[in-house]
Length: 97
Image 1: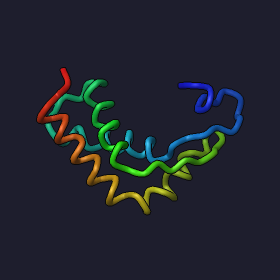
Image 2: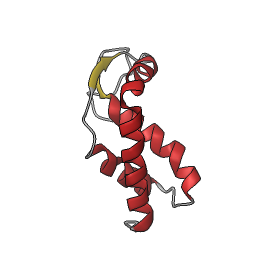
Image 3: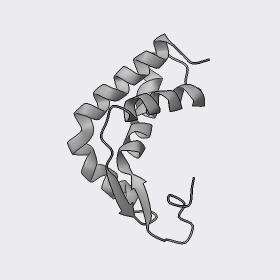
């Protein structure tokens, strides 16, 4: 983590909330697709999905991100799920290792 997202002292940080949602969705969906779940494949799927989704930056304090994820997730859920599924299928068909 860089100094913008590191939060050891309860300071305000800048976070792309869509990135956090994509990471969670990739972890949820990868298990059901019978595909490699290594870190490289997970991160490649995240990168592909994030390149096709708009970013949504928020400022938050430690522990407050979960509530913001839930608020924003409703608005992004359908597009996010579609893009994550497409990204996972791309990585499954053409793993980068």
